[in-house]
Image (cartoon, rainbow, N blue to C red; front, top):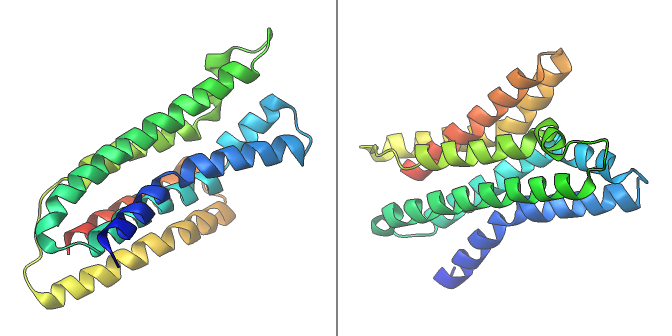
Amino acid sequence: MKTDTVEDISFLLYFMPVVMYIISTILHVTVSGLTFQESFLSVTRNPVWLVLSLLAVSASLIFHIRSSNEGERTGLISIHAKRMRIIGIIIVLLSLGEAIAVSDAQTNPIGLFITARLPILFTAIMFLQSAFIQIPFTVKTENNKFIISVFSSVLILASPIVYYLTNMIGLPFVVNLGASLALIIFGSLLFTRD
């Protein structure tokens, strides 16, 4: 693929969390008939949005790194780390703005924003993942590179499955989400290093 096309696709994948957030909000208000506050909470507490958003960001990183030359990867990782922090800030500001907009006289907007919790968690994960992908380490042999590539793909693809399985078992939300997010972060980290 052309470098410009790869860059465009990678850049657009970073906006998937925002697009999914806005579309979900519109659908909840118009189709479900929820109030604005109920819509806000149902969107911002939806773990599917969080997992899909994290997968979109990870896919952007992996797609861009895989399509580049080995000499360019260090610079690209720095660019992606910066983008992760920016999209995290955009999501948390979007959520805070919506919490302020939908709150009324009886509702504290900051309390509503904190109750939402997943945009805050998304931002924290973006900052954490941006720090992790910049940790330098190398893989020595071609055989190890293939194994790590396959292993990292399995980790990323298993993330939603692990979330739903742990949820079905009845484990606490924090455990479900933590296991799922750990797979995404470590899978992305390994994927960028081969």
